[in-house]
Image (tube, rainbow, N blue to C red; front, top):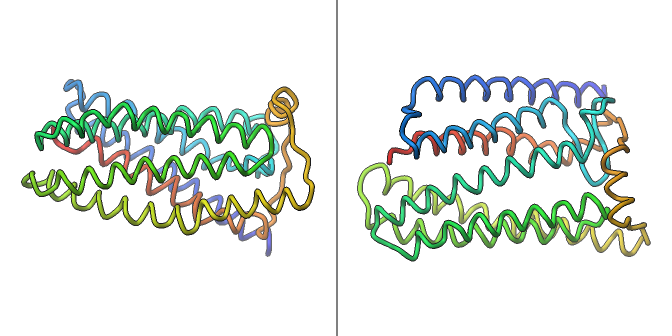
Length: 258
């Protein structure tokens, strides 16, 4: 029964991922990909959707090296590499939208935030890799803090721009600002403190840290196959939300009219 819960969740996650791939195909068939702006969003969302589907079909818990499938495709390094590409794609999408908002609202300073978003979220990937390689949760805490800081700026920008716009852009601006506020509160009160607690607990327990070469080899080759619900249950909420809701947001950005 314990393992059955994990398998049931895995099947649900895989079904949602397959549905998201179909959503991207439908989007590609319906939008005007000849328009450069829309075309870029479509390609970036395609990469993001595909990687999230891959990570749904082959779930992992990177730092602890847990996975569900005993195969080379469950390599932590492979999953993290794919995730790095996907999250930078998502960052570029957000930057494109912010640049467009700034142009529509006549706010040049908002447009100047676009490259900053990409830089901050790319740096965040480096800290995530540091955790995966060294087995220290400190990098995850810094990574999530950078996401929170980035979306604080995004939310404030959207809130300032929304009253200056009309129609769908104004609605999206207000909705986006509210979403960012909720996201930042969650990160500041739940996510970042969780990683800080894990980091402190590992220090107190004297857990071993790995150097770069040893850690990279470990991330490439070591995997612990388990379907124990006790292990996967704490990860279910964020993995499911990330691989579904974030994909829907990525696809929604393709549809936002220029």
